Image (cartoon, rainbow, N blue to C red; front, side, top):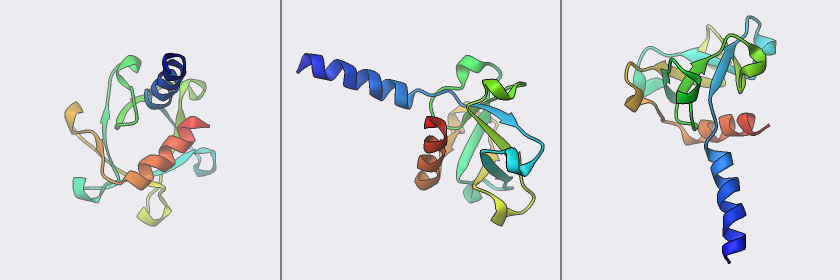
Length: 116
């Protein structure tokens, strides 16, 4: 049992502790995820807090670090100007503890992109 548990725990940890380094592209077709910024928290699928260091952007909880290089990113985003074009609706929060998912289906979809 002990030998089975250890690999399982390692797989679980590596699957859940994922950085969220994001790179903003300038063309819609280049993006992994199309984003629409909403004006109210309750309208968002995800509440995002932008961290100032790479190591702070852990797990899939809305802590994003914007990297300057696409090859360093976990996924790329493009901001669309119409809500219906978006894969994900986000609202930027001003405190780290406020970052959270409000739509679990969208969380699973983003996790699939991160796992690719």
